[in-house]
Length: 193
Image 1 (cartoon, helix red, strand yellow):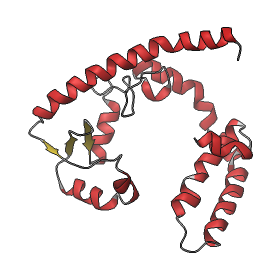
Image 2 (tube, helix red, strand yellow; image 1 turned 180 degrees about the vertical axis):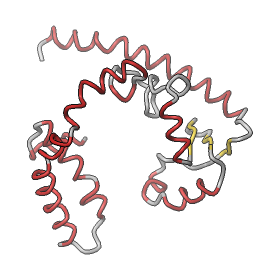
Image 3 (cartoon, helix red, strand yellow; image 1 turned 120 degrees about the vertical axis):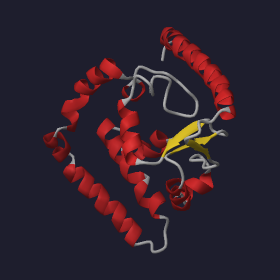
């Protein structure tokens, strides 16, 4: 990159970074206030989806959440957790109340991308990429997917007792996405990082 492009790139980040700082400050204050007044229909939980131990073996936590209320709140992470499919579907459709515009990660960062837009702008963006997800488009990837799956499953079968997540569930989508974007196989590890 030339100096002019570096400056242009840095300047393009000023607004999103400023927005992110504002969103995170407001979210932090809002989270502290919400922690003091969890609605009666919600249950406070210590379930932490970002805890490595929970992520490695989430099923006991899922069962506990499902036995409890429909809505849980984790004050440590300032996250609300919906545990019923119908509630998740309703929330996904209620973009006037539950917006993705503030970001979808722990650190709020608003960018004009599909997963952080709502309403008409989201619909416009979806229409632009819809052709990539038609049956014909997806079928065109089948040979690549089959070849990759055969290679990775073969690796798992050749390594009894291996971690199937690390050998199959993680590399499969990562390598497929990299392939779709034209990332050479030799650069997949760097791409993942």
